[in-house]
Length: 260
Image 1 (tube, one colour):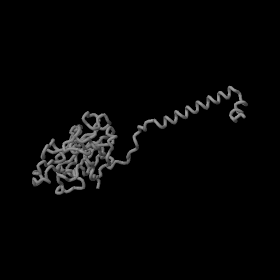
Image 2 (cartoon, helix red, strand yellow; image 1 turned 135 degrees about the horizontal axis):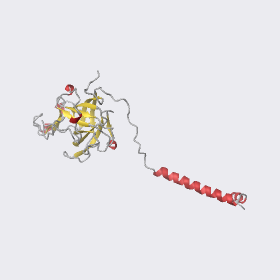
Image 3 (cartoon, helix red, strand yellow; image 1 turned 120 degrees about the vertical axis):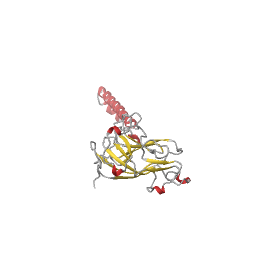
Image 4 (cartoon, one colour; image 1 turned 60 degrees about the vertical axis):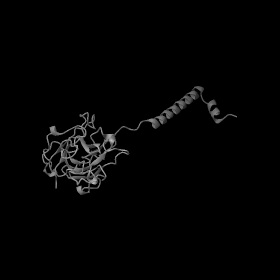
């Protein structure tokens, strides 16, 4: 007895039957290729959408406890990889975007306590090769006294450009914090007062030219998690977690102003 397929074949032109078989084979191969392509294609390279809201210019912004635990097994003198922060979006930025203009300052080197701007033209900068046109400088002035925006020639574009101040141990110029190695500069020389980093919030102001060419002035308040009072800073206090306040000014501005 003939099957339905054989009956069908007996009742059509042989050339047509061959053509139909050929078409079915081609269709099956196409479906197989499509299926394999969907399963093996690489992930899209398009960057995900980010915050494109209005930048809060001329507004005083406070950040508390920006930082992260050190990698397991870290030693005190280890050079730590940078972590990134966007002043314009007031948010942390993932390492994946270091070659973009999404971040404005990085924290790296020993205990991630040295700051850099985002400058793609400087080969020593964390953002080298990217579109960032930022820089950084630290002024020996109180935050409220800093009104004029420095000339662009004053900004440093290298890595770990601003950190320890010359008034403490291991100073590297005008920095935003004093390192009390022996505990005798700010402390009483006791064990707990040694190796403490004192934010110079009253006498130092960090100025940043952002990756997009705007400006920010920053007052660092503390390098210790949940601790803003210098009397509570001890060698074993959780660090380094940056607390700071800042205000943004538009590119082309000559002064910093804060709207009331």
